[in-house]
Amino acid sequence: MKFNQPYDGVSQLIESRWKIAAALVIAVLLYFAFLIMIPLADGVVLGLVFAYIARPIRMKFKRYKKLGSLVASTCIFVPIIFIVGAGVVEILHQISWVIDNQTVVIGSIFDFVSALEIPGRYLEQINSAVWSLFSSLLPAIGGIGIISYAQSISLFVINFIVSIILCYFLLSDGDRLYCAFLAVVPEEYQGTVNRYASHLDLILTGIFIGNAYAALIVSVTSVVVFYAFGLTHVLALATLIFIASIIPLFAGYMVLVPLTVLRYFDQGFESALIFFVVSSLVIYGPPELILRPYLTSLKSNIHPMFLMLAFLGGAFVGGVAGFFAAPILLGALVAAYRVYQETMHPELVEKADPNLKNLGYTCKKETCEKVQ
Image (cartoon, one colour):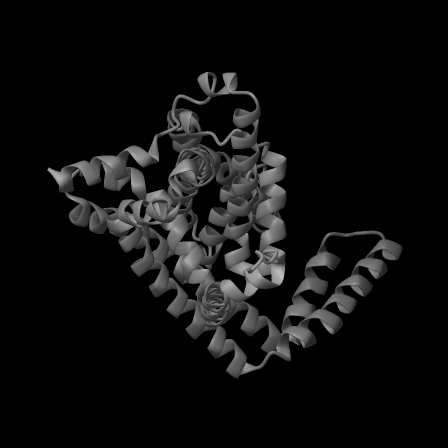
């Protein structure tokens, strides 16, 4: 007569050995896939951000997803390519020129500081600080080399192309991709996952759409204004205004004020005043008075200070990808907290933002249509 042996942990491991082996193989494959995708991280993150920015345009076309995705992608990428992309290349070119002409640049800065008629003891300290900066920082940057510089430009172009392709396919097939993901989730957890995805979608919409559209309009308008006033390096300046405008608590005035000061020393008070007034009214009038009020319903309800820290911290840690990935991570954490709060306090569901969408409804609707 045989007695039942205790079903211990070792027996469970032996019985599940093929499942464990399959899980390990999948984990290894995902690890190598992650390593392969690291160089394209900028393109992946930018493609996701651009898809969020272009989605309101795509939604205007309703059932014509392919056509709407193409039109929406074009409306977003045309100004970005001609202004932001060209501006980044121009900024990199100017950095390269400064590195190759350090003596001329230092001499020009010394002449400018001397013309300010600063007292002698302060002038000596400023000149010493400028010399220390150029003698330590620029050689380190110059050590990167031309080959590395060319590789950076090439990788930037490749990532930008990847972002265009990914943006289009997310706009045209993003719903089906989400439905495929939701189908893998066990049915008892699908409601929670869908609620989390809805919160995250609303948060990311508030983070990117309002700021991005305002920043694009500001940068496009600034090109016209800067050309009208005869400024040099217009595309580089427009790119800096775009970057400053997209970060909460920042503004393009961080670029306009230094330009106004330089214009004051170069052409006098009257010219600087006219430049500042016209630039402020033309560049910031339409976005601040018309666009931002129209997009107030798209707020993410995250404090601007946390968003600013996420943007800047992500840029320092991960470059272009980190600049946009950090706010996405912040939004994911906030969405998880809100779902937890609603789980613990069901009465909060009735008080939730009315703009929350039931993303799972689209999946159920498509399934019913296929069955019929």
